Length: 289
Length: 166
Figure 1 (cartoon, rainbow over the protein chains, first blue to last red):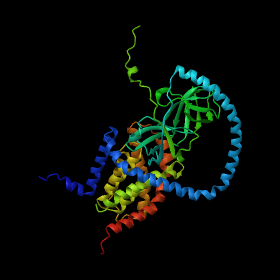
Figure 2 (figure 1 turned 45 degrees about the vertical axis):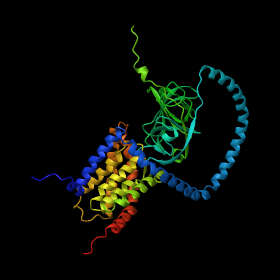
Figure 3 (figure 1 turned 135 degrees about the vertical axis):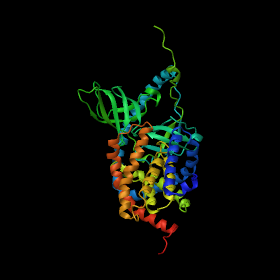
Figure 4 (figure 1 turned 120 degrees about the vertical axis):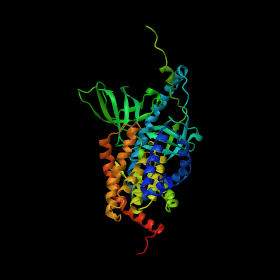
């Protein structure tokens, strides 16, 4: 009887391919159970400095090539910014007055709810997801810097996403433009609540807004904090165009974020945001009638 | 197995270039996939045992840099390599036309497996959107990328193991 020999199986190209496919399935299952985290961290550790280096080189080369052709655009932009500066200076006077009033209101609010100040950690984006179907970015900070899964990621222009995976020196962020991302939001003017979801194309869409709500372009969309996924009041984007049909229950709108997700370089991670623990509430017994 | 010392740094470089540079190059919703094309080219050029290993290494590196289910790229690339191994002997020698055709079919095949894994992992996958917005444009870009990559793979293969003189 011929004995089974693993080495002769591996020596055959087809046998090896089959073995590796089986191994891949094993990797997939182990990965799904989260048992490959340490291995992933070990592989990522040497890749992060190399990836940072490549990103910097690419950025420098890109800037060098783009600089001359951008000169005309920069002049126009400069003129536009000077005009904006003048407008902002006027607005600033009004805002200072408003801030003085806000300080009083804030003091009252602080008395009612002692919400702690947000603390941030800055991180550089070192790469984007190599998969064309996913929208993640890889950051050069990890658990060593106090980052944990679930922390919100922002820039000065608004919400970027949420940390989904952390290794000692890196973390992965699911962008709000990913097709699986859903953010509970509130419209700044109408105070209506809805959901902003990412699309396969990388665009953002506002859903679940009642047809009764007067939804207009340029309305600012903020996180509502519902579900405890994100803190309240983070800017998500603004309404670009709306679609409303009389026989529908909800209307939807295209949303534009102020963030250019393809050009993200540095982000802030809110480290002191604690999502509410809903677990104990789920186990609360219903009172007898 | 002689190519293994080259495979790891080369595929790591390909994966990092893919994540840092090629993700900026978009055509419609699609993009280049350097790791996929490199693994595909190597499997076509090297009619021996190291093709599947390149698929495994390339897949693991791509998965490490990705936020998707760990193993999705690995499974896609090793299955692709297995499929190529089944065609062995049907083509007397891999040539440029076979490689270009393989880049078209390989991209669609790989994307279908990848999307299946995403769906199995519980992600909502809109197959029609994914195939029309991402896969279709990507096949064109990977077709173009295969031209230089296949030549480079052929050159590298000759450096590692020159064909015997008849």
